[in-house]
Image (cartoon, rainbow, N blue to C red; front, side, top):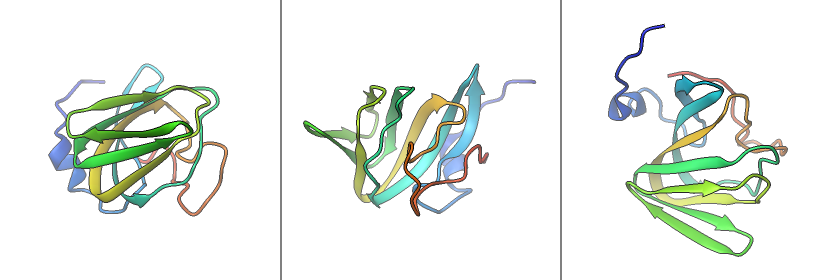
Length: 121
């Protein structure tokens, strides 16, 4: 497989739905996923893995049991495995998530926001 340059802006133009991660690259067992988010997600956790949120454009609040973390463009936050969290974006926000292949976006919960896994763009 040959490596290639991936342009975030270009990839974000290829989908419009919210809370539906799109894989843009893999490294070892990890996937890099772009996601458009708006409104409130669901409380969930990932018992077996940490999850990285990187804000590309906009502002993201991540509600945690002990408070709220606010991320702006160019900022990154790691949610430790097993920690409940709920992402919230008051306006559309474009983010990247880095997590192991096969991780379901809603953790062990199945809701109307549970996205198809391994969807490439």
